Figure 1 (cartoon, helix red, strand yellow):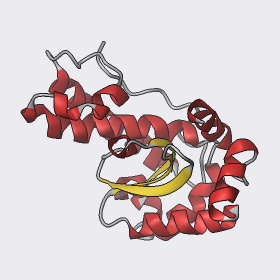
Figure 2: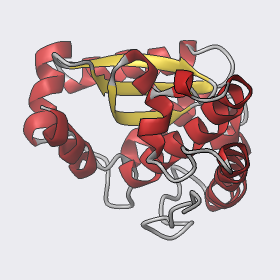
Figure 3: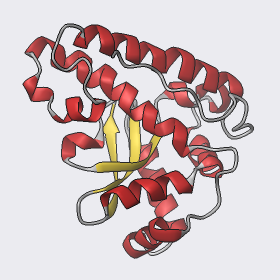
Figure 4: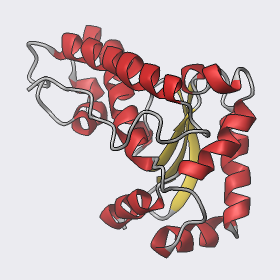
Length: 201
């Protein structure tokens, strides 16, 4: 079965004022859809067409050489965005609790120190890309990826990622990526992050 864009688990305007409705509509309905369409086109007729995106992205070298770039970019975009939407919620924000709070405090000292490092990494990511909280096999860490590359390429499990492509914030924040990164914490769904951590630790 061809890949498809998952429905948002909330209304387009539900994350206002931190993430605006127009951005959500364009980002979800146009950008994510384009990644899916191009990924499906690239995989059509191959043995990988119906496989889980994570499995495909972990095995890019097994794809025909002419497929690797389009799949890396577009299936990567589908994978990243499919992780992104559920990690936001109109009931999100605040400080994490449970195992993810313990992991963050153990690695970074405090939630505030973690946020500062995460935001700094997001600001420093040159051009388009993502900033991530990952599980690297031994614990949590912060990393960034260019374009639509995923942490899977480094053997890491993504727990929480923020999209720092301009299409994720430009309509509301223009070129003020730091303002977007700071506001985004008001919508983070820590329950989903805890579920992902529980699946790998």
